[in-house]
Structures are given as structure tokens and as C-alpha cells.
Length: 312
Image (cartoon, rainbow, N blue to C red; front, side, top):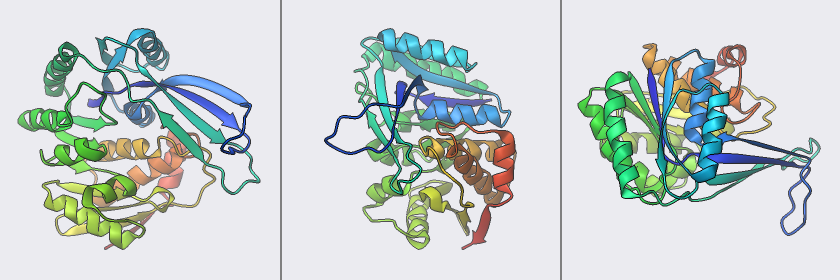
């Protein structure tokens, strides 16, 4: 079983517009609501791959009740801590005009409620209980106010004590401190990795350099994701450039989360590093056709066969 930790669950409000023009009033052509957060996207892909998984997260107020109900509708096994305040909402603006080459996704995330100390300690206690029962842990997403920025570090240390593999997908100080605890895999995107290593990443060579720097920080496997250009992944004495096929991407939100799910699946199945990264890129690419970690196993397999693996 895979335990997925998502401390800052949200309601995704997805609004489609023809073309997004700043400073102009728009009328959405379609609106949808769903439970959201990076961990939820991870779990959608894990379920598609047929893997047993459980979500550990925090909800608050009426928005939190709505998140819980939508998770129930999706059949997501979960353990939720109920905190004070109200869970956050994320607004995702999707451009849909096929003739417009700049079509993109614009995401506006609230910070989330301030989590009280009792809920913080309850979350850590529940994690300590759950980690014993799982095979691997994925820790992902932003950290809501009320948690110290070393929360991922603390949870990884508990997982290490239980001899469990860990995958960390975070940003900023939670990423930097989390890496210091020695997770099995770390998977920041090129922007997050660039901030971590104080550099700009615009090529595979730069991605490899940053991955090697993360290995030097105590990580067993380091990946730098490069969006539609795939990823670079490395561990001691082994590195690969993974390139996906060109597809018609409709919604890239959650692609990185789907890739994290692919890493988790590859680890549990005992795949080689190259095959694990190949599966991760296939999952992320398949998700980009739909968004939010959604795809089919058939799509993932078809894309996996087209992914190119180059040894570095």
C-alpha cells in the first residue's frame, strides 16, 4: 500500500475560457468543481495503475466537508484530520481556443487555513501509525500555515525509522529541509529545482547538473522534470534523459503529480531506474491529455512504448 500525504487539500474550481486576456472581463464557457491537491492527482494515477493507496490529509470547515464528499465519490481511501477554519480553493483557468498557440493553464492557489497545533500533532501521530502499514510514502504539495517548514523532514525521518521508501515532491523551504532527511526519491520541476540550487535550468545538461547536486545532499535518486521535454533522472553512477512523444496536451495541471505516481509504481514493482523513469514520464504525459492525474492504463502503456530513454 502507498501512503500519500497531502497536507493542503483544496477544491479545484476549473473554469474554461476561449482566450485569457489580462484586464478583460471573461465569461466561462464551462465550470467544474472537484477535490484537489497534488496528492489527489497522485492517487488518481495510482488507482489507474491498479495500486492500493491511501490519502492522509487535512480538511477544514464547509469546504473541507465538500472535499471529503468528492473524495468519497471518487472512491479514494483516506484518513482526514479535521482542523479549524475553512479549506482553500484553487482556481484553474483553462484556455480552450485551438487556434490560439498560447493556450495555457493559469492556476491561482489560496494559501489554506492556519492549522492549529492540535491538528498538526494529530497529523504527525496519524502518519506515525500509517507509515508502519504502508510500503512506500509519497509526500507532496504545499505546506499550509501553522505547520513548520520542516514538516516533510520530520515525516521522512519517521518513515526512515520505519524503513520505508519515500518520494518527496515539494518546493521552497519544505523541499530543502525535506531533502536533508534523505528521502529515497526527490522530484522537483525545473523551476523548483532551480530555486533550490540557485540556478536556471533550460536544458537537459543543466537538469543533470542539478540532479547531481541533489544527490550530493543525501538523496538516493534525483529527478528534474522538464515539462513537455521529459526529465533527467540520476543516482550514483547512473543517469538518463527521458523524452516523451509529442502529444496534444489539453491540460498539464497534475502531470508532475502523475509522474510521481509512476515513480512510486516503479519502485514497488522493482523496476530498474530507467524503466521507472520511463513509466513516470508516460504517466505524466498521459495525464496532460486530460489533467489532474486522469488517464487510462491503455494510454499510459501506449505512451510508455514511445518514450525514449538516453543514457547520460
